[in-house]
Length: 229
Image (cartoon, rainbow, N blue to C red; front, top):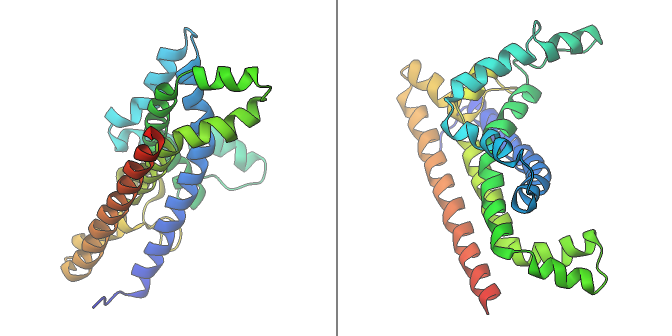
């Protein structure tokens, strides 16, 4: 039976909130970006694709460090916000949300990019000859044919955000109810030698991540079978 302290439940709420907003924002940003990468012949395509994939190889502490400089009170964005009478974004939920969106970007874009490539241009060309505008093509052609890619993208983004640590710790610290997510709280419990609480949270995170991936990959496999039929 779970024996969680109030701070543990608070960290769970912050984590789920971060996962939800990160996934939603990245689906809105990643869909047109991935579609452009799949269709464009621009000379900038390779450079942009490399930038998108950069978080896969970049240490999260490096990304967190530069975001801290940028969003902090002396950074370009942070100082501008303070000059406008607003608070800088370091050590805030908005700040870790920005960091999470950047760090999880490839986990949204890559599955969508592969789905758009598999779809090809032919279905869109046929829809265009039938008089479908771009919105009709997206909702009636792209979404049905690439729904498996959207499911995988959303799942990977949510699951990856669930376990983010380095970027969050560097940019947001460990402020209960604001920036203290589960991964950071597990670190805090371990550092305080509170292994019982760390074990409960770690096990819960492990089981949740596995179940989310298992269910959605199973659903994606079923969708792919339906499309092939």
